[in-house]
Amino acid sequence: MKFLKFFFIFFFFLYGCLDIKNLSDEELYEQIQFIEKTNDKNLISYALRNGYRIKLNPNKNQNCVKINKTDKIIYVPSNDESEILLEANIIKSLYAIMIMEKFELSEILYEVEQLSTYKEIEYILTNFSLDDIKKDEKLKKEMLRKICMYIENNETLDKEIRNDTEKVNMLCKYPLNTLADRENYYLSLKSAIESIEGSDYFKIVYDDLLRRVKKGEIKYNEAQEIYARIITLPTKELYRMQRIEINSNLRALKRFKKFYEKEIIKLKNKRNMYKDLVNSFGECYKDKNKTGS
Image (cartoon, rainbow, N blue to C red; front, side):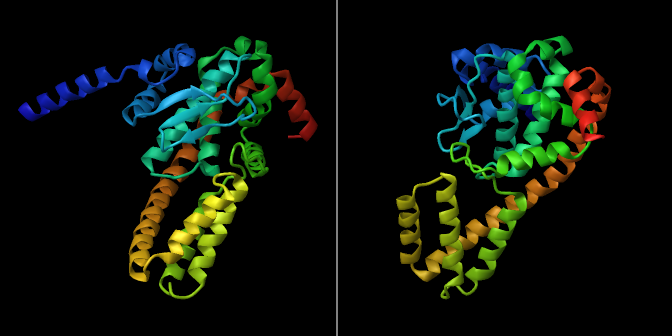
């Protein structure tokens, strides 16, 4: 009993130290305060506990969530024209970082973007009135098409997110890898490392470095330096290091896959609460008739 009492005192003391002012720049503080009053306030405490800060992205051309895990910074797209969109983007970024930290993912995968987009739309429909949404021209321009797809309760939203994230956009590091892409990569490495003295392993590593260069994650000279370090390591040391990294990543991806399969069903089922809104937005009604759905 004494231990439990100490635990609860420690927990409340720790939670009290998690000041939301430590989470964001002053220009985002008002939005953070609103989020703290919603059912998604746990996302704020999660980011705080993991030492993250949220900043407005100074590059207004980057209309996507950017996460710097090394410096623990989340960059939210700048938006001076829509308070709703800004708040929704914060939710999207907080939700994405919760997934990445919880499952130790090193990059935003398509599945993370998919889950985060569903969460973002659900947040908008739950926390803002129809009148507010209809009056927000910027929100309508950027999100109404996806909101329509969401409340029409079909699979077109998944295709839209996939199309968006498959376009080449070095600022946003698109195209995004899928969960299957990363699983196949590490399984290929695991197979190739057993014959590490051959060339298969090094070719897989080099091809992946070039992929990262094309996406803008690293520069070409950085890729060459990384590759040079790898090929000069003693075979036993390289085998030990890579075996640990490969198994660690495969475990992380396996855990995330289990979460994703349950979470996407849960988020899609929540769409049923909003299906009657399809006739509330003229744009959705027109689009529905156009597609014949």
